[in-house]
Image (cartoon, rainbow, N blue to C red; front, side, top):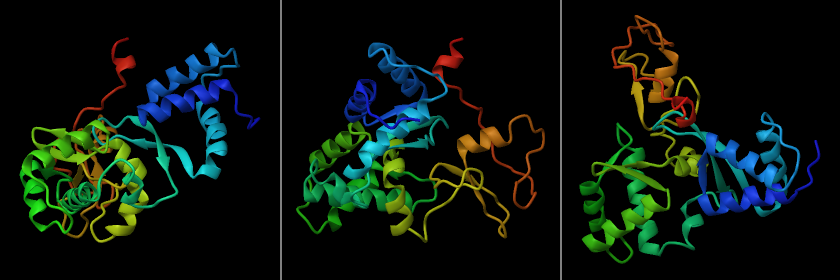
Amino acid sequence: MSRQMGESHRRFLQTMMVSGVIDEQAAKALYQYCCETHRTQYAPDKLEDFIDTINSRLQPMFMQIRKGMSENNGLQYYALVNMAETDITRMSSDYADNELELFRKTLDLIVCSEDGKASSTDILNSTDSMTTRKMKKSETEHLLSRLVHDKWLSEKRGEYTLSTRCIIEMEPYIRTMYQDHVKVCHICRNIAFQCQICENPTCGIKIHNPCVARYFKGKSEPRCPSCDDFWPHEIPEVKRPHSQSRR
């Protein structure tokens, strides 16, 4: 297939640059819109080839449109990621040094926790040990709001988790820096923060909540896929894309 970038590819990329991350359904709709707007051939099953063409042109700039799963709903998302820098310094153009330090501390709290979450109280308390300029409570709260708005963090009832964009873009860094703490999903082999853990002390595998829902769907007596022990956790429902649920 031709690797020539056309106007449809450029429009798709421009939208990704603005959005940062979009779900698979939105990506498919955007792909169709770009092709129809610029009167180029549209094939519903060729989205990956379309994105590969864009990525071939982004490679010299160390950028890539990368696909990953949301831990919240199990849906696939596409994110425009920066591959030139492998750590949090990629955010330095948007955040001050002390803001980046607090984000690192928040990342520490989330990755090293049992449930992949950090409370607003723990994040506020972590400012006491900052080596750069310490932040006031109001400054910390404003930064957390920005990190949520910029899609680096997600927040629910005062607890913060890593967003889909953050996991997709930061996964190589997280795997390198937190080797002793990173959990890997037994089903999909991606890093897992929101997950269930086998209670057999000799097993202890982790499975993403959405992967749990899909793997155990329809099974009356769920058993661990590794040790075959009974799986005692509540099995969540499989979530469907919005466009499917409306039909």
